[in-house]
Amino acid sequence: MPAAGALYRRALLGALPGVGGGRRSAGVPAVELAVGGITVDRTHLADYDRVCGFRLTDRLPATFPHVMGFPLALRLMTAPEFPIPLTGVVHVGNRITVHRPVTADETLDFTTYAENLRPHDRGRQVDVVLVGSVGGEEVWRGVSTYLGRERRPGGDGGRDRGERPPAPAGSAHWRVDPRVGTHYARVSGDHNPIHTSRLGARLFGFPRPIAHGMWSKARCLAALENRLPDAYTVEVAFKLPVPLPSTVSFSLLPGGGFALHDLRGRPHLVGLVR
Image 1 (cartoon, rainbow, N blue to C red):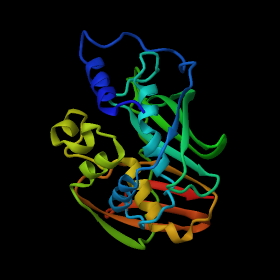
Image 2 (tube, one colour):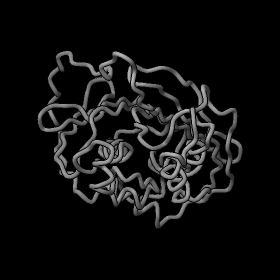
Image 3 (cartoon, rainbow, N blue to C red):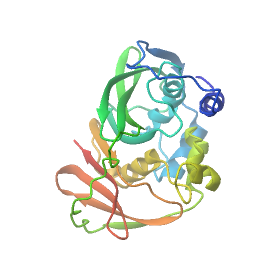
């Protein structure tokens, strides 16, 4: 796997005036990256389970292959031809399909590619697809949707100022520790400074660090662990960031839905298992 630290340094250097590239590509890169023979480090898996609230078992949580293959996706996203610069990108959605249970004694091959670059009210969106296979059989697929914010003449940022529906009753309240950002960065390899540094967060417009969106998704799936079938798809939309520290409300919704809100009823995440 590529070294994530070097890729983040490349992205940060590319954002400096006079150092970064010019105009970004108008399309997605016509390339697929692949790495084979990736084994599970059981110590890493146990650390991940503890940070996200999963039970300690040999079965991989649905979100763990995302962590295993994340450096490969990061390599794709830091390529000069990728249409959206990594710095300032917003993770707005994630869909994971588990075709069958995957265990810690299996060896995975990963491929990644980008598709579906499309306009958005606040810029452009693109999907980064990551596929995990065992012995040539696809066992896991993740699709992460990223938004690259761009200023539009006369635009108001596309913010929806309509009336917000009332928040569902919470079935649990979780205190999100301020160390969640650094702990999840350690087990996931996602060291974006908006999650780990007060200064880094302020540089991107946040008064304090925010939790990783994929930690929020994993924490919700950990709460649903006993309800999940062997094969399923779980999709989430990331709404407002979770500031660190904070207290959040987890809710179960009809038809396989779930949500995470703050104590004022504002949504952080809305998801669906099917």
